[in-house]
Image (cartoon, rainbow, N blue to C red; front, side, top):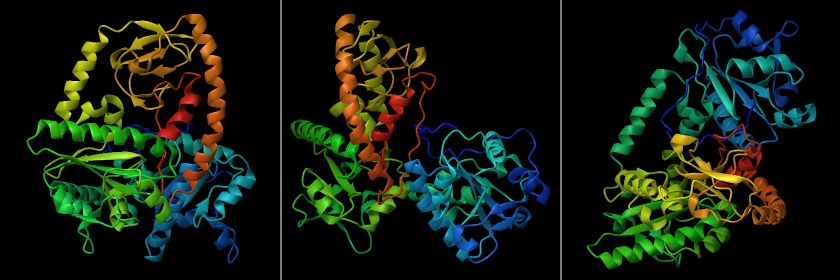
Length: 486
């Protein structure tokens, strides 16, 4: 099983499970062949339930229930984060009498890790020792990333009765997603569309108890209505998150440049940013916000979580751009800042298309290949049409797309603007120094991973790398987990 992050930004695309042609009703015999083996017709019940009743539950007892097959592992922080969310949804559904059950399929390293992880799980589990059943389930549902929650309907007679991306549904809709049928999900999408169609900056950022934002003093209140007619960036970030701390100074610089350019231009056009905090306490919020020149939601205002769910925020730092009409322009503000700096403003599709054409034109004058300081192999200029695509720059560790200098031997990629041309010999010497520096940074990354596991807002960590065949994939995964934290 691959542990990856999904960079597909089309959050409306709820993927259905691949099928082998025919689906069959989840009868006792079907359930037994799916979740059992020739020597086992039971599942392990939760640790808490085992103390009061039998430790085993017959697989046949699941007949007629909506079933979530949950692929997860204790060693992976995004699984632990999602696990907390899933427990809340599961317990709420069970308390309501819903016919829902979850079956845990472990990817843990050993029995002790499996038992420790399962201690807090209120649902059923495939025994850790049944490797063949776990492998068969992974193959059947083509599991390529964890956490993964496959939703099965009791009358599983249609191809669209099985939803592959239950994790997405739980994060996005919570208990409202139950019973996970096509009709229910269509209803939720219609309601979602209605909200987005009627969206204004006022109904996004206010609630019945508050119609203001905080300025840098934290004491002065700025009316939300003062943002009407402006381009607004909603900046979801936190001081504990290393990529956030690294991105914030860049965003401050870009923000000030945009503000200055608009002031010089005249005409009343304006740009503002609102900080939406995911900090752990008031002092962290005040310390972090104290470095920012823009506005903020009050700390722990319920609107913060509402916004994260409404915009299906999958990582922080995240910059969501709202246009002067109050409608969403893009959720990819951070990526556009990284790619185009202040030139990204006003972040519209037309502006991005114009910038992409400029890059295409500029690429015509770039060298076809270069040796880069910090890498020993020759790098080749590639585009999306010639082996390139979305990537994480191995030099500045920020996202890129379109043109890149790529090592065809190991998958190392850098932005064209990050290339530092050198002779082959000096490239090797610089690489030795860079490898030493990266070893030191790994220590910092381990601390960050521990922080991510205890984030106050549940986190998803889904990555998808185009160059999975390259040895550099592991190194790039480390970078992506730092850049896309939640």
